[in-house]
Length: 124
Image (cartoon, rainbow, N blue to C red; front, side, top):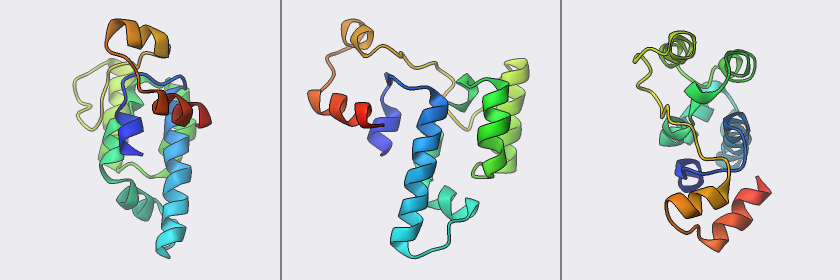
């Protein structure tokens, strides 16, 4: 999961990345036999959360679809809200760079993309 979320080019929105991670964390909680709570989801996601580019979401996406899940800590939610509203440097919890949405542009600008990754990303 972390390898995919770290990838600088995905053909889905950052909101979809978050939703996929949230769904995975729910299944991982069930697999581990622990209750699906925001704290447990945060725990099983671990460092994956820091690779989700929350500051690139719209204020509406973040407020309606991310903040209400309580998976991020209160401090992290406040930092992202401040960044989105003011573009301040307060958001150290996650990457602020916009992903390249076109995988072919990425392969031209940066480096070739492994074929296996195409299959995985298209499933998300």
